[in-house]
Amino acid sequence: MSANKRSSTEVTSVQKNINEPAIIRQVSLVSIIGNIVLTVFKLFAGIVGHSSAMVSDSVHSLSDVVSTLIAFWGVRMSKKAADKSHPYGHERIECVASLVLGLLLMATGVGIGKVGLQTILSGQYETLAAPGAIALAAAVVSIALKEAMFWYTRHYAKLLNSAAFMADAWHHRSDAFSSIGSLLGIGGAMLGFPVLDSVASVVICLCILKVAYDILKDALTKMLDTSCGEDYERQLREYIAAQEDVIRVDVLRSRMFGNRVYVDLEIEMDGDKTLRESHAVAERIHDNVETDFPNVKHIMIHVNPADTES
Image 1: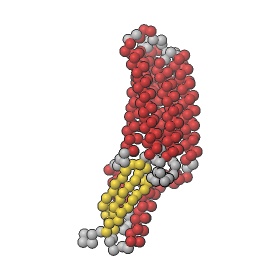
Image 2: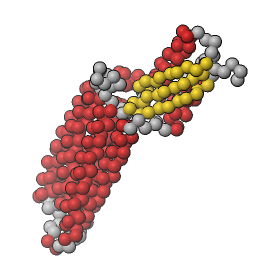
Image 3: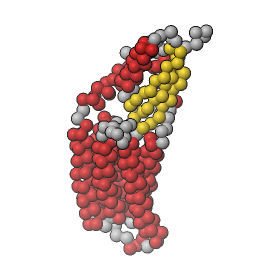
């Protein structure tokens, strides 16, 4: 068995053995508690330390609490089994959650950027108070903690194959970038350039908007039955063509369904095989693909009789 097949099988085994509900609760709880602590600390540091950038940063952390609740709902709902009303499952609910997260991030970024621009365009920099050391310390703590939360959430998002948790992880990373902007702005303001604190708010806005754009783009791609791409389909086509009794792959189409993949396949086989034999081969290919390509939720196989003259 190739390295790719082994790794895919290992992933499938891991995914089957994990306690998904427990992990979803754990990741959500860690994120919510961490963001509440950061929000309170950064808001306090921003007010006491006279830093608009840190106050903006605290608003971003508060939005992370809301985003985690949305991600938690999306992931929980997406794991529901198929039912009469949703025979194909509920995976696309995660895309809806990701869309909401992206829009929330975009609104947060625009609000933060608006306040910073208003201060910059006012030109009244002499009235701005220099930030205190506590605001600088809060930025350093925020960078370290949010980067740790990014890697923690990202790890479990990959384990669960969850777009909503991956979006939440990047929300943490955007908060870390925001705090880097806060750190630079606060440091510059403490050195005698108070307007840099407001400039940092605008930088934070741009970082947030970039992450929001990426999340929205990914969610829309997965909701619109987008192909999995030429590389993925080429690997799948080569894998199926190498299966025993397959003469040729005539048609192969893939489409994203949330984080899962549906495949439509037409293959050529010996036309002299009985219906039972052809069905057994198709069933074997079906099972092999879903085992070695863990993202494939279902593959529909149509068998064509091979041209005996070719």
